[in-house]
Image (cartoon, one colour):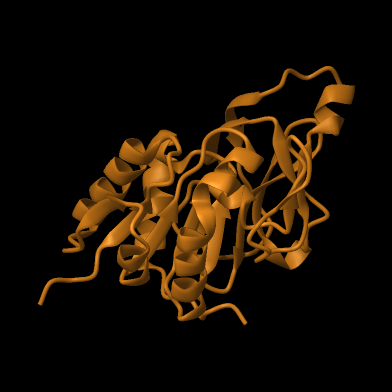
Length: 219
């Protein structure tokens, strides 16, 4: 019997191939037999063993491109317990809404909104926030950060960030003109503001942790 695939959701976004490559590399390193596929087919998403939603660009555009069919499939699969990883805008879509180019509803899985990084702007820092930043853990332990070096860094590219969040959803933060949520998790749904697929050893460790993760579904 063929194992259910790890699905990289194709919704006309960026970084699909690199996210798939990172998942394949992590799965191979772990000796996992799972196939990794890129698909925009809702039925494939519903049958996935793991769901990965990459994201590149504006919140409103990504939310619109996701569409009702894929959104419903993601909702149904994750409600039944399928682990979900959102990357960059994929993580941002987990929030209640985004404020980029107007107000756009998100998936509403975590509290907060995706807003301009005003603190960074006021300090004269360049946007987009682009480059390597240290990840500061907000919990003593979490399966997603298992085995990470104390000085682990992620590679960020963004001008908007989560604010008004629930502290209980934070796993790690970064510093860029203020506190920036870097990893969030609630139940079986998690996300990284930084690009896992571009974060080299740190990214591969987090991807491997995600593939091994056996979370309790969100309520």
